[in-house]
Length: 252
Image (tube, rainbow, N blue to C red; front, side, top):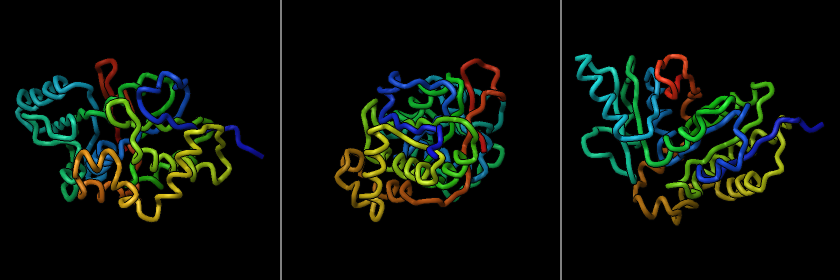
């Protein structure tokens, strides 16, 4: 008997107005590189990840460190694949690996990932972060939910579709559908599942001609982000610890 829980994929944030977000389990994907970096930070002991929309908001958190006279927030800003001038961190997971962040919060703004988060956060469901690094943990988390339909949101590039996000969406959706807890009538899910099956034996080679790899030339970052299941965490969105309306953070 087919389960009533439905899964769909939004291929880019520019298409989000086509979806009803209410009461959905939303999964945010930005494989290259925001959600991968956020997962690494939290897996290495970070307290929370606070996504912000603008560089100005990120600057405000830098000022909070100065006024408090201690380092409470690591602040990262990326635009067009590069660290914004005046910041020490961007969205490369290699900046966060092999480090410990106990007791620290990461404030981050990026070109694509935090834009997708911003478009998703004011709904009545839940929001989590996914990467290849924690894919199975995400799948298990969703499987253990009782009633929520799932919408996977691909961050893309400046509102446009990116194939690397589609591959992760295909991995997640194909696993959820295979255990008969979910069904889909979506062409985007069909496309994602087929593309993942074609590419899964060597995703790096499959992506060599992708827009991202031709534009950015960040092979070491790409190889790191394509690692599967090197951590067992699921970053979950919460507004409970933030006084200012519209703000929240991901914690594990």
